[in-house]
Image (cartoon, rainbow, N blue to C red; front, side, top):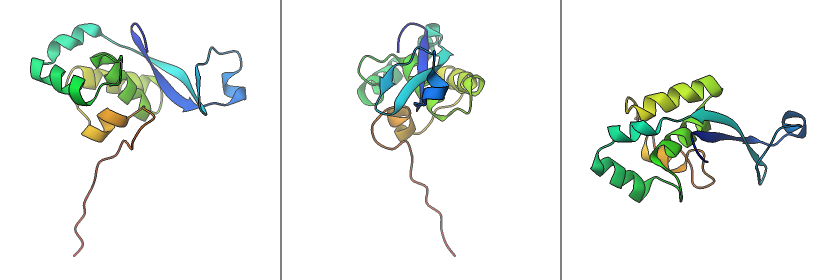
Length: 119
């Protein structure tokens, strides 16, 4: 991820990617983009920045890149990804730890536990 954009990971399909510039990973391609606003870093507290650096950011990833990575991982389309990114980067919404750590990454599961009582 570079500059003011982050990418969405989707399965590689020759028909879908023909003629497109595609960065290949094992069975994955980066194809959708979100416009990031680096000025929103100022909304984060020093403690928040330290926590993100220590626990959530991938190597070489910025705060805004992380928000874009996670938003694109769970979005239905580019507009949805942009809205989710905006909510996260403005600190209106923050996903759970596994979602921030693993969403859009090739590691772990991006899920949290959910317990339901049975009567």
